[in-house]
Image: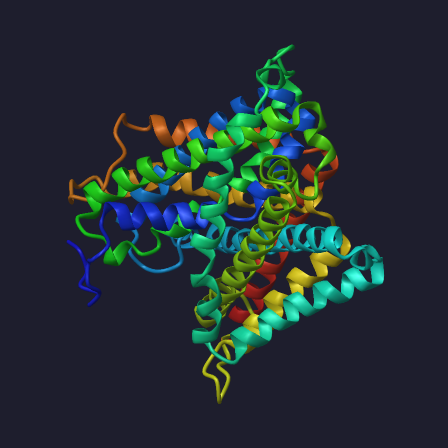
Length: 432
């Protein structure tokens, strides 16, 4: 039986599809074509197909878990309901850290982009100052009011999609078929490495399903919207990679800061280069503004629910009525990570963090089915346990491509989180 939340169900198939597309198509696609080409050459398209297949499977898992667990919290709520508070705590921390690493990666890409136009920003000290201004400015904007924060997010969708579609449409006259010829099959190792970093451009679509309480006929609308949204993103990404590879060929890996702007320079001339450069900057800045608007609310919720032992993060600003300490902490973490790392390194860690969360959600689908054997009319993925098991298996393949250093780092992080969790639990019991 569905709980009456008081929300009006007004979001249909196309509205939900657009929401998913808007969230997935972020900043990564403006940078990653060159990195994929460096690893895979002309065969990079196969990596896009593989990543698109995985994200479709994962989002189906989110759809089923979300139809059973109706409280807020997204992946954290699904994992916590299925496996208990400890596992939920790990999922929550990896959600926040994955987003923080993602924001740091995008901020680095944005600064590199600005450095192309103004070389002074390539200086290390000035680079760090600019990162501080970006995170500090967005934090201030979101502290003084949610209206100001969400206003920045609204302009992003049309600003980033329109130039991309125009670039794809007009670039075909400059595409050389010789540049698209696949000379050698990629190695299994390269395929895995490219998949891991490219997944950065596909993650985030699960956030588009958080409007579950306002979707019309969710049992039918959700799977249709996932299919339409993921298909659109996949076609868009493949066409972008094909256009970039076809126009620039072997030179594509040389334009890591702004590969699509370099394509636009050939297709449209200097005006096109400037337009795509600005579009990429707007998209990156818009993504950061949206993250710093939304993710601190997760920290605020975790502190309010006492999932993390930081009661101060549940504080509300007396004047602006915003979770100001959570906003400042999240922005501070993002700035620190951005200052010490580069795009590629941070993107891999962000992908790994979110893959661990997605792995938990895939397993939670299996557990939630066993906990609720009734046919309550909730959305259920067809073909039994095939989709969640296949999702979990592919995620493990992605994670296997981490370096030994990265795997050890994640394991150490989990051990530290485990110690913190049980220490806080023991202290809490002692106070009672």
